[in-house]
Amino acid sequence: MTEREAPLGPVVGRFDDWAETVLDRWRGRPGFELVFQTASQLGDWSLIWHLAGAVQAIGDDDPGRAAGLSVALGAESLLVNQGVKRLFGRVRPSEDGGPERAGRFRRPTTSSFPSGHASAAFCAAVLLSDRHRGQAPVWFALAAVVAVSRVFVRLHHASDVVAGALLGLLLGRAARSLLGRRAWD
Image (cartoon, rainbow, N blue to C red):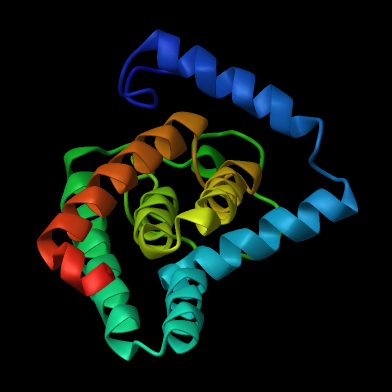
């Protein structure tokens, strides 16, 4: 792995290689393939998070809450996909000579670093769990599955996902502050 592929150097490259080795143990097993391929596809355009926000808003009888989540996810996507990713030219694992990705997936045209799916997932988890703190483990577990799915299907390196998750946590907290506690109480 070259430094261009591992934007933070050889330590990150070794982490990515280790994660690939771990996930190779799960690849090819039907249950894991189904879960991770489905999670990856539901993460496209943050579909799973918009749906979760709508269901939560219906349960809370607060349609403005779903709209707020969708606006926050739109801003997150614009910032990550049209801003941060343009700073990096990292190629995706299936495009750098590595094994082909599994399944049929939309081929992203942006840089691999950071993962937009992971960023959106963790941003959404922050916002979805804000009002219902007891649901936080569910939202963060689902965010982790969506994030790991991107490495599983070979559309991201593990370090892309870690960076995306951290960015998503920060953006979720920023969105919560910008939208005001009143919007989420």
